[in-house]
Amino acid sequence: MDVNEMETLQVDLDDTNLNAAQHHARTQVCKDKGDLRLIAWYDRGRETGGPEPACVGEPPKCVRDYAASHGGECRVWINDGEYEFYFARTGDDVAQLDPNWVVHVHEGMDTDEHANVQGG
Image (cartoon, rainbow, N blue to C red; front, side, top):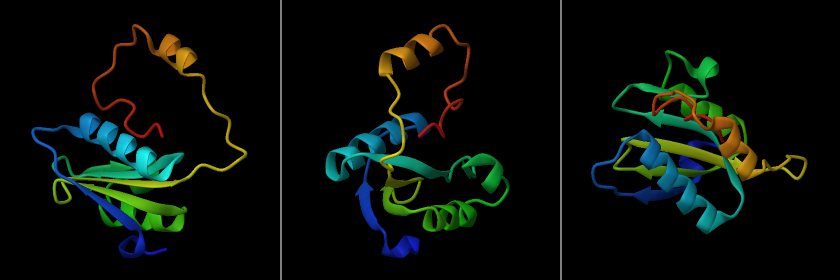
């Protein structure tokens, strides 16, 4: 599916950063579409996107092509393309993580705000 054929949710946010935009995109898409997973993203201000090794040095075209060729069906377009997030259905064979376990594993880790932006 071409990204221009994907359903697009347009969102305007005041004073946002990548993590806040991603959180809002996930919340919005899951509320509207159910259980979707993040498969690709683009940050226009930093000129970067992912998934990272696949799209290093080639965003935003690679990000959009990757999403289109990996089952992307919904795009969240934030602040007129300042951030783009692409989501696909989660297959029945995907195990769900225990949120308490995830919090426990990450407690006390010294990371910057962009360390896990791809974790979909």
